[in-house]
Amino acid sequence: MQLGHLKKSWADRLFSIVNTCLLIFALLIVALPILYVIAQSLSTPQEVIAGRVLFWPRRITLIAYKEIFRSKMLLSGYKNSIIYTFTGTVVNVVMTVMCAYPLSRKDFVGRKQIMWLFVFTMIFSAPLIPSFINVRNLKMLNTIWAIIIPGAISAYNMVIARTFFMSNIPDEMIEAADLDGASDMQILIKLVLPLSKAVIAVLVLFYAVGHWNSYFDAFIYLNSEDKLPLQVILRNILANAKMIEEMADATVEQSERLALVEVLKYAVIVFGSLPVLILYPFVQKYFVKGIMIGSVKG
Image (tube, rainbow, N blue to C red; front, side, top):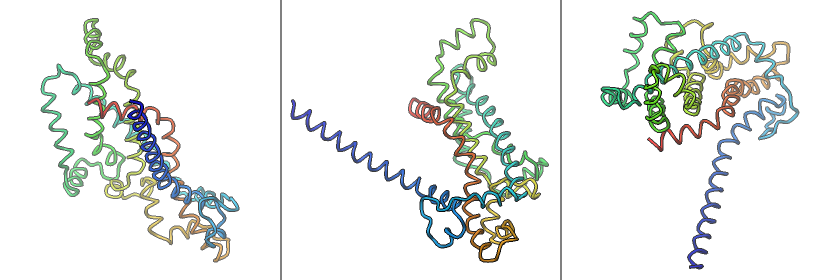
């Protein structure tokens, strides 16, 4: 009996060691590129161009970020991305909850058939040209609604929210509120939503990150430079070395200017990723809980 217990203990220890090593390896794969980019963006151009910067900045300076804040184009893109992300996330979360909650109610007639329609959209989606024609016919081209309305709801996120409602909101509680005379909207707002902070945080994170990183829809539907989001501008900048050279200070010498251009590439990447890095710690505790409940218990 003791021998069996000892073997099991060693097996657990071996599993823990292997698991820890794999997690550390995964952490290094994710963290080292981030540290590399941040270190390059905070180092002086001379250190970067000489190849002496790896994962820690040398002779720390904010010169690249100062050049970014001088660019009206980048600041305009930043403002547009914030507007698109905030507005789009609000619309997405509201639409997802309004769809997921009725489909989680067992007394909702036809909910299985409607769910199959949503699953169908997860497998088959409209091609690009019909989607473009549809947006054009709705007169949404070159407007904020061309970015928000076509993706107003994600079927995958709706399934997560529906599963969460079904698993964590007791039917007895809803029935009691119904007997007390509460309407369906009152039950949703005063009872269901306060108990669903975890899944709402997950939805906010998924949708916000998706909107912030999205560039393809804006690339297709927007043609005014003053309406482009940050990611499209960053793509254009990184794909066009001349645009980065125009951002660099024209008063510096040519050799220093070329070095500054190299640092600017890294600073632009950090500049575009910063909001997501700031948002994630605030919703992390809800994120893991919401995903586990929404996926495993369903």
